Length: 385
Image 1 (cartoon, helix red, strand yellow):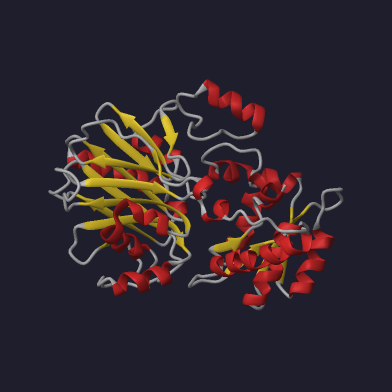
Image 2 (tube, one colour):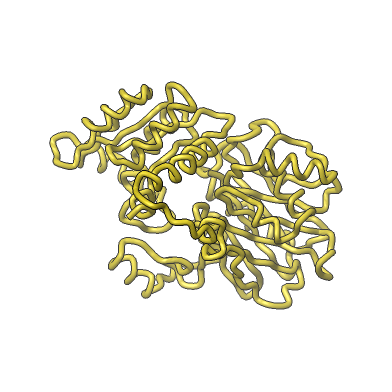
């Protein structure tokens, strides 16, 4: 994961830069590999953007911001595009010249070619901020924010009396002073009832998430109107929704599902770094393990174990790992282990959720052995329920 952020003031470029640097520093854990900034550009006064990068694709050439050939469109990107190779071929045929091998660069050229319609061409998980200095669509430069259809990558924003700020984490907005620690009573009630806070609200008053499948456009520095999220994706209009052919029986449904799962796993394994796997005894992560093992031999798998409890899935996870020939590791978890790292685990939370501790510990184990990327079956139960 990476962390992106930015502020847009009506004036005071120097303060914009200092706030962007504070926000970027607050998200160092999201991108330990490097940082990047876009500040002090006379074409966009009062604007400052920043990023902390976790390098996954094109480790050496993917430094952000990434510019187009004429240095008037730039992007800060958090996420991964699974169809970037296909899009690169199409855009090259349209005359675009690429300077890197990164998926990030796809965004600036796609914007040049298709504008906001480029979102419909993207397959992946993402949140990005794109700056267009060309003034082709307005009298002022444009800052364009967008988030993937399912909201896998986060993006938060807040409106202040003197400007607008956004970031991948709420903590960055707090660190910069763009947001204050005023608890939303409605959000707190929702958390206590359901274990999470439903988007677009957050636990803080005045801080909102850009909803999944939404975009937002700002004019810099004019800001003639308060920016509003607008949907760009509608599940009812997706290709899957338009396919009205229903399987005749379970066997035909399985035959239709399998190639979709194979394609999804294959796409998620694209990386210039090793990829691991979070493995439980469930069908979701077990299916991913089986398909991933066919693509990459000896993939590393990690299982949380709860010794001496009825919730321990270690035995069945070992069976799956052995069958798939993964390099398997177990992470024993008990009250003592949780207490030893509880402060760190809670500090890693940006928005509260009751299901975060398990994810933190298995992620910590994967990172401990040097992994940056891991596949997970999270969401499988909900998808097939």
